[in-house]
Amino acid sequence: MTTKPELLSPASDFTSLRAAINAGADAVYFGVKGLNMRVTSRNFSVSEIKKVVEKCHRDDVRAYLALNVLMYDSELDKISRIVSKAKQAGVDAVICWDPAVIQMVRKARIPLHISTQASVSNSSAAKFYKDIGAERIILARELSLKQIKEIRKNAKIQAEVFIHGAMCVSVSGRCFMSQEIFGRSANRGDCLQPCRRKYEVILKDSEEGHELELGKDYVMSPKDLCTLPFIEKLIRAGIDSFKIEGRARSPEYVKAVTKAYREAIDAFHEGRLTRELKSGFMKKLGTVYNRDFSPGFYLGKPLKEWTSPETKATEKKVYIGIVKNYYPKPSVAEIKLEAHRLNKGDRIMIQGSTTGVIEQRAASMQISNNAVEKAEKGKSVGLKVKDKVRRNDKVFLIRKR
Image 1 (tube, rainbow, N blue to C red):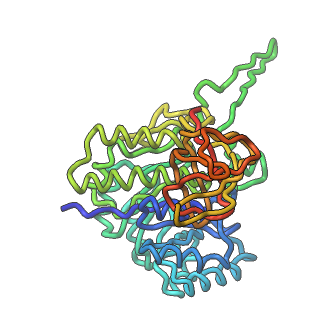
Image 2: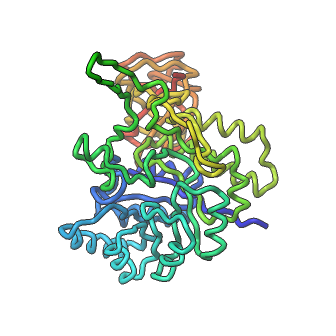
Image 3: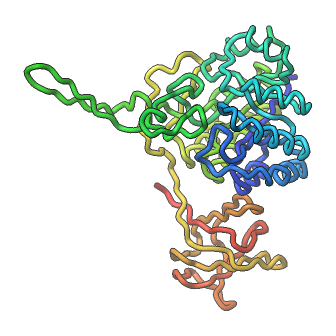
């Protein structure tokens, strides 16, 4: 019997954390402000590490802290304090690759996961990190499934791989374009993704100038990785952890992607993963932010897998208002419509740091205890909700793009 892999989801704030947990993640990974590979996402403060871990452990979910950027001397004292806080909070592992951080994590006796930033792409490198105390290697994204199997077999160490999310044109994100153009380093987690943009190439000679436009194929902007069409191959390979990229993406993205892979993994182990079922999961993945999908390097080099930077998501959310009150006995939320009208039957999404992400239809609506078919902007409307919501949760309409 093939062992069920860990499903590891991203969390950049408490709303996405709750969304990941509710959607079935076995573990989450998160960063602290300024010192992880997603500086531009919201991230948590050092003082919130304990709260993150507590919320995870309450639901039997593991919590991994990412400290995986290049580090400078001026930051080492701060890193030491963060590692100490992580130890006190009971984090399940620290994701890193800088030798200084590795030393601190080992000294604190916290399980050590080697970041994909280390670009581990062979068995000898994996064994090296194992010998210095690593429990797990997050392998380079530029490996085929065959190569991953070989490394796992030879190194005999836990292997984690990315199964879904953004791909970088540079090796494991080691790119200098953002630093060159904007002074914002990708190697410090601060990439502004100039590779995703449209460029013009100007050819100059002594007689006349020619302008050529690069934009049709966006030759530096890869499609997003998606392994769901062949997820059974990865499961059978015995890979220990399946990681979803996306700490810079929305809570609804975290929910939709986590839920799709959770259901696919469970269906495989229950012997009911069919082509039709996967087709439904793919349709759901397509509703949230994506740049179209590619198998990455798993089945061979992804040649000509380029995309334009615009999202290919089939749905979008439109802010309409806020939850003012929740009445548990009738399971009704009072919603103040601040930006848009709401019609009976509309699909809505409610998001909050404790609530996570809830999606449903506006099936039953009342104003002043009278049933209504619509409520205009500026009104407060009572709405029957399927799950508990909280005051100040945000409410959105879900619309087709």
